[in-house]
Length: 288
Image (cartoon, rainbow, N blue to C red; front, side):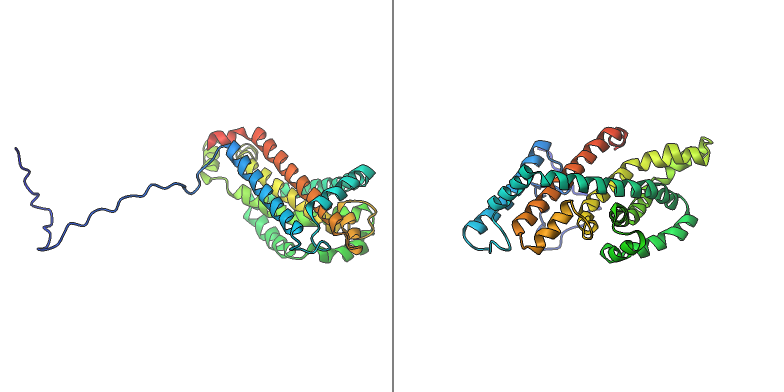
C-alpha cells in the first residue's frame, strides 16, 4: 500500500483545528431567465385569466362587492352580447379602429425617420431630443381643449390626440433602437468602403429594425388607451364615446364590457405585431 507524501508548500492546519468542509452547491429548481415551452406558457396565461375571473365571480356571488360599482361578470357578458346584437358595438369598433389607425400611421411615418436621425447624429439629437423630452411629459388630456381651438371638433381633432399620445414616445424609442447597433458593425461597413448612406440602410436600419418594430408594437398599445381621451368631445360613436356616455348614467356593466373589448383588441393587435415581427426579422433570431 502506497502512501502519498504531503505537499511541503501547502499550509499546515493549526493544532486542534478541523478541516472546514466545502459547502455543497444546491441544485436550483428555477434559474433566472429560464425558458419554458410555448404550451406551458399558454397554460399559465389561461390559468391567470381564469383565476382573475373566478375571483371576480366569487366576490360578486358572495355580495362582497357593490353591483353598482363592480357588476358581476355574467351581467357584463349579457350587456356586451346585447351591444353585439343591436349593432352598436360594431359601429363603435369601426369608428375607433379607424381613428387609431390614422393617428398611429401618421405618427409612425413622421417618428421613424426623425428618431433614426436622432440616433445617428449627435447634432440632430441635441436639437430634437431635449424638445421631445420636454413635450412628452405634458399630459395629453390637457391638449384636448387646445386641439379643439386649433382644428375644431371633427375627426382631425381625434387623429391629433392619438398622434400626440404616440409620436413623441416613438421618436425616443426609435432613437434608442438605432443607438443600440454595435459600433463594430459600422466599423466593418467603413472598412469595406461603404458610403454613409449604404451603412445606414444596410447595416444600421437592418440591425435596429427588430427593436424599431417592437417600439411600434408598444406604442400601438398606447394608442388604444388614448382613444377614450380622443373621443371625449363631440363624438357620436366609438368605444371611448360609449364609455363616457355610460359613465354619465352610471352604467358600470357597459363600462366594463367596453373596457374588456379594448383589452381584447389591444391583446390581439399585440399578438399580430409579435407574429409579424418574427416572420419579418428571422435573421435576428439566427444572429442570437
